Image (cartoon, rainbow, N blue to C red):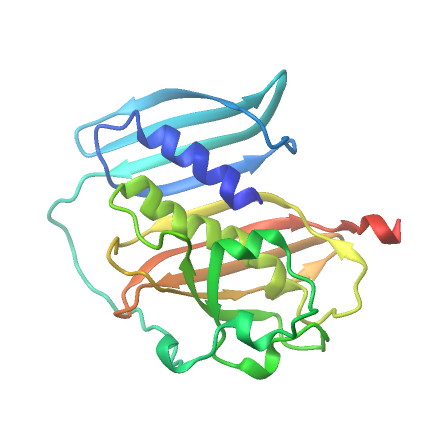
Length: 244
């Protein structure tokens, strides 16, 4: 999962920052790693009073897995407005979990066991994929632990969701497409923090898929409706292994 790998690099970069407030983060995926140890080399490129720029390079053996840039920004006076509006969706407490909606024999990817999911439109949940618009809207709670006081791990929750959910959004109109789409990159802009918000609402859209590329953009909201992060990724389509 690219978002998980990127989150490790984000936290490593944050450990070298004097300003514990992420502003933006960009990650380029270069190689696929093994489930094993990695080394992250962090370099402070710019250290200012109000902002820092930090590069983190993740390696495994002789391969570079990701190259990242983290920008921080210290809170200060400035122009202020907030016109962001969370989509009108049912409260997560009123919705069944995706685990409850799926049949007992439905295939379950191990990654999704790390997230409790509540879908505002339960009719779209199930093993039988049908054609739908290229969008995605769902409540998420990380498990076994939902919230984190560490500002970098808290920010990583939004990073992971924005990278991961581009694919389910983009493949909506293509239920029979024999392709996979690894992320080439992911970029996130952090607008607010909500370390006490156990549930996050993720809204993703994929407006264009063409010539082997698919783009996705999205937003992450806290339980109280605050916009926490926006971002997106560019994905490279490739034939699924079973179809090649």
